[in-house]
Length: 143
Image (cartoon, rainbow, N blue to C red; front, side, top):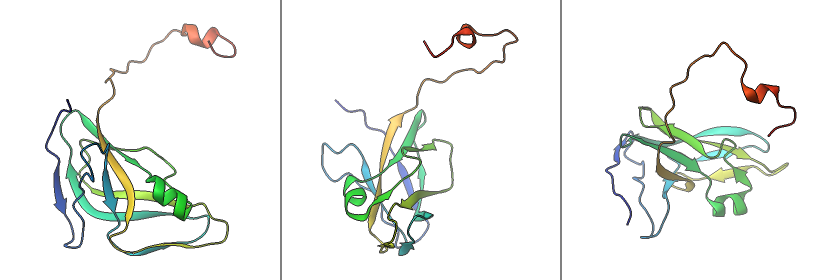
């Protein structure tokens, strides 16, 4: 049984699209571009969603590519999955790269550009500096 949390979303612009799950079994929700954008071949741009999200404590949002966008547009999210921490308070944006060598890619305002997946944070660690070498440093070529 899935665990439900509240994801508070604020529009920064009236044309921003509030994300929603497209089916009961969907693993994530669609993110849409706020403005029309053209991405030149072999270039990377930041695509605005016009949304600010208040993630539930103990979660992060991963921004992942939509397979349909990747297949049809030859466009990728180079840092996928991109992580949005629960304490981030700015606009949600998507880094997109046109992988084509010759064809510019265009997205219209409102087009689906990525998928957001809210997940529990990974194990939190307390990072401490040590003054001794670790066992791993003595090994050559991995484990």
